Image 1 (tube, rainbow, N blue to C red):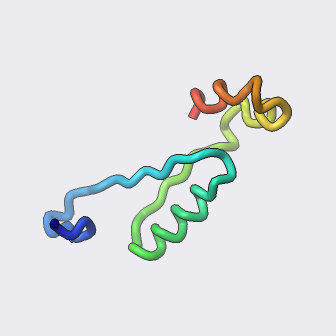
Image 2 (image 1 turned 90 degrees about the vertical axis):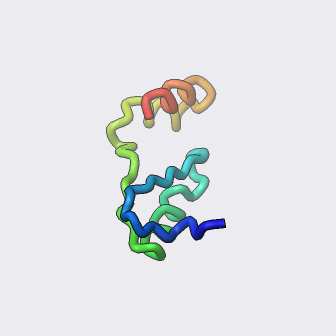
Length: 69
């Protein structure tokens, strides 16, 4: 099995981390990015117009919140 992190051609690779709100995606991304010296990109959650509504009524707004992302 080839080493997944050996990339002699310097071809760009992407790693996506998904999970529920509060699962630790941001923390995991930071740790993995620092460990491998990778560029990290984060969702712009503050731009989501449903975030406040979601925290007030999760059952009602969870679908809208996820579709926006």
